[in-house]
Image (tube, rainbow, N blue to C red; front, side):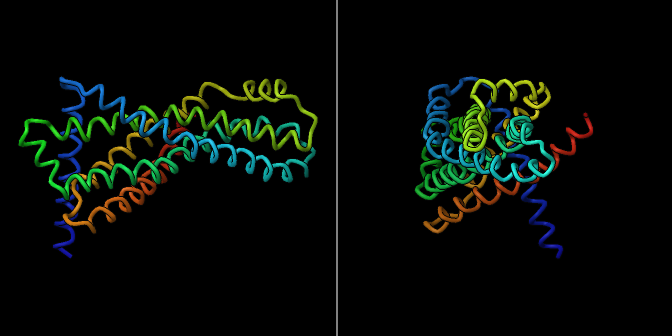
Length: 252
């Protein structure tokens, strides 16, 4: 038992050291703008097809499943209001984070782990390149930046899916739908979405880079790092979702 507690404390110390190293390198020059842009392209643009399909299906299915409950009370006219608040507040950031955890998290974890196995990280240190600044900071900054961007896109495509679901049953124009949507969305809903997206983006980047950077040697370590990056990112996202919901309920 004592040995397990010791290992846990050592792990926390390593996480703290990793965090402090990232914060120090992220704010100190020189800045790796070219690598940050490349990572934003890898994380953002290459995720658009999967994100688009997922966001559309979530909006369509959520609207379809919500209709029977509102029909029981004769309140189907409130469907646009319901799905707009649900998608903008919770579903868009959560779905974006989960998809990114699977696609982006595994990619970052496997990439850094393979570089660790082939000793490319050691070679960078020998050649005078700071691996924390070039490999870690750029990826965490890119995920923290692109997840909110993708989140806004998922919200839009999810609302479009919701409209198409409503249009199959009701005679509702696209203009009337989005007018009702924007009337029901308050500033606090957008704030909640952005807050979730930023926190989730940072978590995915940090967890994935940490797991990949400290992966075990050997080809088996690459697979374990990719798997651990996905599992840890998703687990932390759900924990943070719970905490953010509690925090926002206290704020009002």
